[in-house]
Amino acid sequence: MSSEAVPAAAGGVDRSLLLVLSAPSGAGKTTLCRRLVATMPDAFFSVSATTRKPRGKEVEGVDYRFVSDARFRELVQNDELLEWAEVHGHFYGTPRRPVEEAKAQGKLVLFDIDVQGGMQVKARHPEAVTVLVLPPSYRELERRLRSRGTDAEPDIERRLLAAQAEVWRAKTYDYCLVNDQVDAAFEDLVAMITAERARSWRFDLAAFGF
Image (cartoon, rainbow, N blue to C red; front, side, top):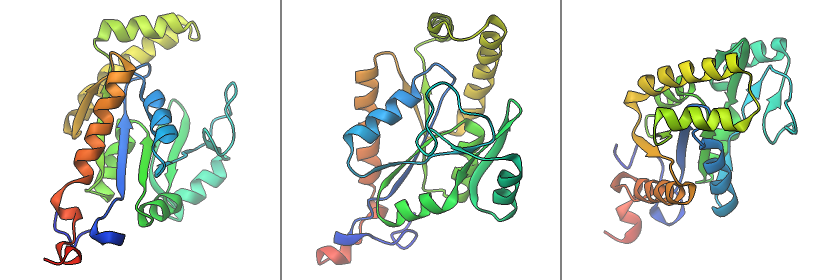
């Protein structure tokens, strides 16, 4: 990608980065997202809109933006969503405006979305970086899901089947990140971000006097 594809930010370097994290349920992508937000001052977490009801201690505007079916249809019709999909009978989507505003400010924009949504983001923004978070093995994923004690057996089986499909659909993702130990996985993720922000097309060399 040329330096003209994305306007350079102040200082001659475009710091904006759209980072999509996708993973099978139980692989730990949400934990990694939360740690990035907590440790990186310029990180912006993209809060998805959904038509499902809040669960547990979920907070409006923090975990999700909870909307009606009618409101969601309006967002789709008005092209106000960067991506959207129907998952298990409910709709999920990413509001476009907050993402574009954060990107214009040179921020690290984090998406905690499924592969279907990740591919839509990549189609609209080819410069976006997609990362598939994996457990160390399918057996370990099954162990994690069962050890949580929050899902009935049919739900666990459904999640495991969905995990297989999710992983195989993500073969076009830019990176795979194995989350065996969360500290090590987080360090690897930060290294990916650092490398992506150092790509040559992000630098306006004229701003450096060349």
